[in-house]
Amino acid sequence: MTAQKDDNVVVNVGKTALKGATVGVSFFKDFLNFINKGNVIDLATGVVIGGAFTKIVDSIVGDLFSPILGLATGGVNLSESFSVISRGKCNITECEKVTFPTRAEAAKAGVVTLNWGNFIQTLINFLIIGLCVYFVVKLVGLVWRKQEEVSTDWPCPRCKQMNKLGATKCSSCCEDPICPEGVDLNLYLEDPEIAIKKAN
Image (cartoon, rainbow, N blue to C red):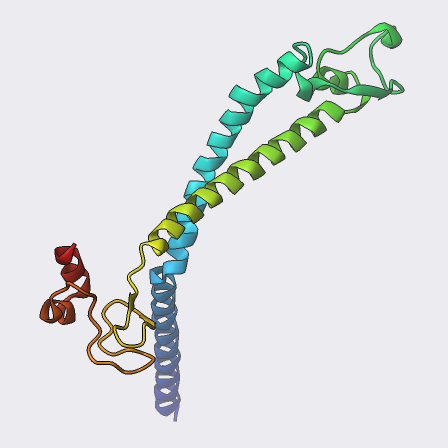
């Protein structure tokens, strides 16, 4: 009787292990399928380029715009501009007479400050980042638009309906075959791009 119970336990343990192994293999297959999808690679590329783009924008703000802004404000570092709200918890004797050159020194002394300069600097950074993103997107849009303008569509010789490169029949009148003027028909039917390049 115990031998039969032992055999049942071994069989059940084996079945459970097999199910676990199947689930594990299935998980890794799904994971590999997920990784191999283009979306993950696109996302990773976007994150890397975004990180590099952030450094470029920080350099534009810190190295180009901040000095110009500093000149406009009389050499004052805008991010360190603040107003003292309360000196109530100030731990320096004669706190009322002390001026703090930086926000960090004021905070260290226990003074409550309104950091309006840092807010304006952050707002300027946001606007510059927005402008940079806008110009990059516009630039990419112009490049893509130029590629689209170099159209690979060709008009049907009969009805003048535009058809995609490599089409063998017109989508409108079913004229057979569609081939741009001056292009070798046989080569066009084999490889339309090469045929058009050779014709030009």
